[in-house]
Length: 212
Image (cartoon, rainbow, N blue to C red; front, side):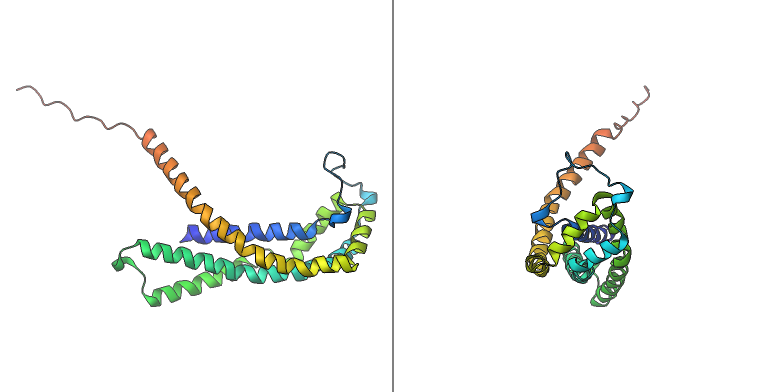
């Protein structure tokens, strides 16, 4: 159960990081230069101020977007955990299965820790860390351009449609991961079993009986 719970959380945080990354990039019409042509770090005297970045995050609605996604993740992860619990229960003999009371108690514990897990990385801290990275890779002029873009009707429409797109996309991701992780897990389990068998010491034959 711990393994499945941990896997679900990892999936959730990976998807969360992917979503934040999709929100944090420059607008399509003003994409930054490729890594080969752009310096990896902006000189300190050209870095955007915290006030500029706060304005950018405001027009990008990052706080609201991340908050909305973090509300959806617990539901999706709960579904993942419940499915794993069901598969485990069905694979066990009837005598070893949990009673309804035990299942309800387990659900309460799982829900409580899911809630705690989703608060491990608060949005304020997330934005502070993001701002520090922005300062290293975007100039003040860059940020002014992004602010202008996300203040236009096209930029606002992009932001409005992003949650709709993500709401449709997230279940697809979860389904794909769940389907393909079964084969991956089975293959890894087989390979580990083969390694353990090949590295196991050979059985010592019993000593020959002493001659009479």
